[in-house]
Image (tube, rainbow, N blue to C red):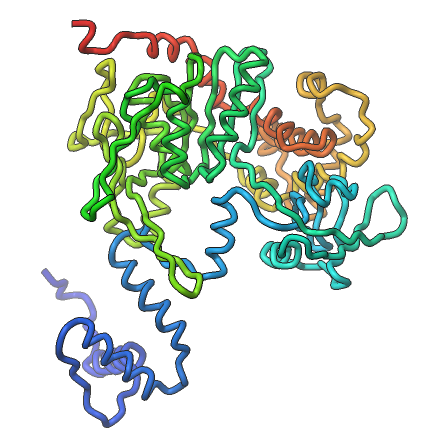
Length: 535
């Protein structure tokens, strides 16, 4: 019902509003009448295309039109059917193939150039003596001031056997010097870290993506940890967005008894249906397993965690996963571009499909997954219920729901700025230079070393110099987490390797702490007879 006391818009106001809608929403019409394209969908599309090519105000780029048409068509299907331009596909192929051709450094970007975090062992840069902390201030004589990440990749990567000259400023030397590096094959490791935790009996393996070399890298990591006395394993898949389905199958096969189903796929076209089972030959010796996941764990990560959960081979700890239950087939185009087309759905051994709804916009689809509130997850009554091997309830709803949900916590405004603006990383990089000659075994550094009070004051001065307003209450609130980040960055540079970074980071991680508390439970669960065997 309308409000009689509310002031009504004048007729002139309504007329003006309508005119503005026409002017801005519809644009200016020519006197030519509208064209009506008839016929099949392809004939109508071709008619519009020809009209664009013949009469559009500027000469259109046919390749852009084609790419836009393909992108628009795929967007109407699902969020994971996508068009990938040739340049992007080159980078993606390198990542999934597990190698690229370049000089072999891990780096950070600063306004004044490229900072080498560490040379990758055995690569051209390492063989020429490049060190952590070196700054690349020019490439082929061109300053790297303000360079972008993509520019670094474009300039340092190239065909095997070709050369690139970089100008290096080393903190311990007064003058910059040139290094001419011959490019070679550089491995991209999908096992980001593998080491024993401080208890001496629990192994930790982080997989950051499922590439063509993941299963082989994992096999090597497990054998190494087993030789060091590993009695239990934390498999960290947090932030792992997926990759090759076949590699997820092989990773799960390391832990699941031969003959058991790992994953099934179901599609409309021939060849898209499959049942993948574990093989005895791939299975490693038994030890309890806990899988760590979060909202960034998707696709192949969910296949692994879902198989381990359904077979009660171990426990899943962390946050609900992303919820990607669709499988894509790559279609190569003749210009190097690729269309990834969804051809099937995949299901966990109990029959769950974890795909989240995708009726919203693409932005909402991703934001709703990555920004979900893990502190109060409620499974709706409409969620389909499935049973694990021992009869535990699991759900076919929006990803893999962990057996134990652990909120990772949040940072204050100060903490967020220190992390987001890379203040901690940049300060730790410079501070580590003074500790390069630190005569302390890593295990002692991990257990005993703390940043001094003067170091904290210096960090504060640096942060304020970078324009961050310091709040002492917020610093105290986040102090433990932030100092762990600093210590991890220092460890990576002093001991020269990313394994050392992760060995520090895991010491202040609520989800890992919970996983360690659940190892005996995971062991008991894995040894429990199947539901049908218990009568």
